[in-house]
Amino acid sequence: MRTFRAAERARSRTIALATVAGALALTAGPAMAADVSKIDWDKIVPTKVVLFYPGQSSYEWLRSDAHKGAAKETQRGDSCVSCHDDAKEEQIQGAKILKGGHPLEPIALSGKNGHVDLSVQAAFDDKNAYIRARWTTNNKTRPGVDYPVYRFDGKEWKSYGAQRLQPDAVAGKTPAVYEDRLSLMLDDGKVPGFANQGCWLTCHDGQRTMLREATRAEVAANPLLSAIKKADVRKYLPVSRADPNDWKTGKSVEEIAKAKAGGEFLDLIQWRAHRTNVVGGVDDGYVLEWRNFDSGKNHFASNMDDATKTPKFMFDAAKQGGKSQTDADFLKKDAILVKGGNAVPFDANAGWKAGDMLPQYVLSAADAGGSAADNKGIGVWKDGMWTVVIVRPLALANDDDKGLRAGGVYNVGFAVHDDHMTARGHHVSYVKTLGLGAKADIEAIKLP
Amino acid sequence: MPHQAPLGYVAMLAAFVGLGLFVLPGSAQTDAPEVEALFKENDCHKCHHPTRSKKGPALQKIAEKYKGKADAGDKVVEQMSKGGKVKLDDGTEDDHKIIDVKDPKIRLEIAKWILSH
Image (tube, rainbow over all chains, first blue to last red; front, side):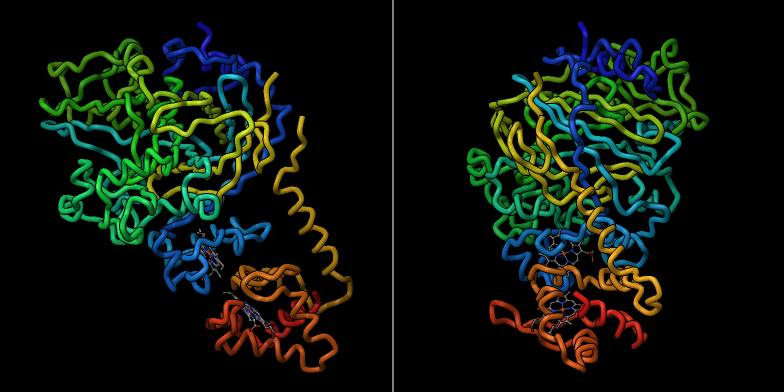
């Protein structure tokens, strides 16, 4: 079976892929319909999409007087770029928010880049759409393939490491670590306002790392979030709340199901450098009342056994060079746990010492299935730059997917996380259009 | 194969041409790119486009309005310095932005740059 991953690797022979890969290449699940190595990307003119660091510019902030002279226009649904249209707008905005002391970014982030130039290309054939995106990461010495781990303290396995904006990481009490990501929100015209205001429709106060972050007690007391069994507030669309400015005003589960049936949700496609890349996977999710995963099984699963409070898998020492990570190689050596690859069942009697570390997630292309596993992809990091290709089947008919079709034009928003950050710590684009053989900001070329 | 101009290219070209127009050899005082940068740093461009009307009037329109008036520079400086109410298209009023530039000479340079459109 010639997989997509193998194909892409063959194409870029020189790439020093920083993963456990090798033999894993062959575990990459269902074969890609098209041989991606046959796509001649050099023939597809890239579109430059500039992403900027938005800080805490939430739906609510944008509609408040703090967004000086723009609250009323934003409330009535004006397009962001009706005002933010300078040729260098994203550069100016990102630099301004990160220059220090800006109300939208309370944490000093020295050395953080204000904007990212994302080079986007797209193609499609009878079966799939292919989106290729490249960007230079802020970290030039190592790709963001690391993720917080479980660390043994002599008694228990505890979470260790956190994204850069997390208070313990800011205070230096735990190392800053998180995986790099490329995300895409996609609308087929059914989400009111998305064509004008893009991703900012989904970003609200109360979410993790945003203003007035909801407490556990507040979430537990919330009828909608307890009905859908969630422990925090995540991206949501205005249609899911009686008052879109207040996450607490969730509509009934029935009303939300109705909105979903009417297509009033966004598809959220996410490529992840730690949790999906080495098994050739890409997340498939959707945003409506929460940032949900599609039904079925993801390419990654928790590595914690809730009953025994120990990890489920450890490394096969013969393949990884040790049964676990330690301080000596943490954030230096790749440690991505893959079922059927370098993972073996956890052995409680393996002589664990304080400081031993194991991944929080275990990956498997074979286990992934259902609507959650529709998207595939691969990323390679070379000379400080990620090149990621996402493969999305056309005409998906699941109730949690937006079906892409030849001739269709879609509204898309792009985001990139790198530099050990998650949640608001990303760069985001104003909304663009993607056309499959149709006129748009980004035109996917029909492959022969 | 459809040809697509990379978004940035046209913009870059425009910026380049714009620069060429403003950097007149020997014109010691109006360092246009710097003045333009101040205009942008102060978010003026978010409401004032060179040629197109946004929330505020186009710079060309402002220049036209003051054409030939001796006190044009002072009037424009006044507008960016005093704040106060401005009328919007829909009849409502808004407080106008006060520019964050202390030096009156530089304020005048910005005014002259606006009037050069």
